[in-house]
Length: 403
Image (cartoon, rainbow, N blue to C red; front, side, top):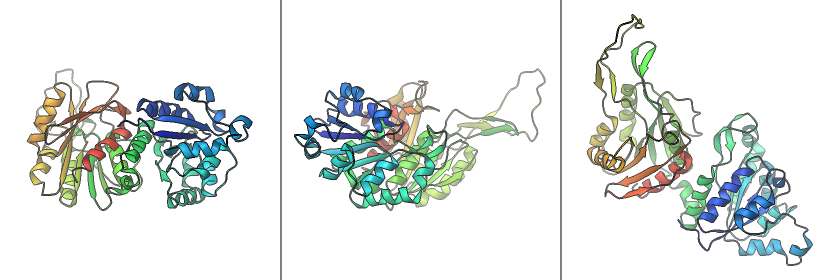
């Protein structure tokens, strides 16, 4: 959506993730937002004011005691004119100051003066994020009307792995867009009370005890959807093929290996689900017979007899009851939209997400995706390339119109 005419005050805290704020600023200005930037003293150790000035086309505010600016009470003017205060990254130190009403630099002073809604996107070490005192400070801010863009899980700059990464710029941008579209705070728990079933990752169809047929799916798209749905208040069950990903916080995970196992688990939990999202790259074929011992190489050509596996989406589409919503993915290498539309109709889907897996930088195993959403009416909505976490938000935005 366009953010034209919206005045956003971007506060940048001091952390390595501050470099992502440059990309966030670029995205906001691309949407037409008028963005002014406030840097904390610590932030200036990681990024320069000149970078943000070039991107925003405005002077960057850094000093609470700037005699020229403060002669006009600039901290009050900045707060009064903003439609939204967005703090990204929000460090543990900054969150603590905000929670306790401290105002010892320009950003915390502006936040204390501001009457506009405040969004904050935490970024810190996983151990720091999990500390009770940090969580208490976060809860204090939320109880006072602040709105949070949750940190992501993954590899951290400090070498640890876990929750604490600054949300990707596209995810933060999506939160800003939802705010100005009127969804705002309500979007956070918009799936409360809903049971969501998601499958993700590849399957393995074994030829013998050490060899199998599979595909390059990493499961990242399904895991991103599971985490996003959980953040919106859903009760999420994630059926995962063999992938090397941590379980999203608050999500029930069931691990499977073969397409038959995935089908069995999905069919078991589907009747109680309000929403099913099929992101898994389920094997279409399996060996007609799996050998009990390792097949030895003998120098001769090998012929494999393959048989089709049961189509999970087709099976669930036939069993779908009134009120259930079924979302599928179409991984295509040609005729993207036409093939996806055919699949949507054949499998009784309510929405299909089509992506071209022939492109190496998106889809399978990639961090980003570029998809087209197609509804039952045949309306196709292409999305630009973005991180899978951001794609997940856009998919759920579309799904919420159906549940």
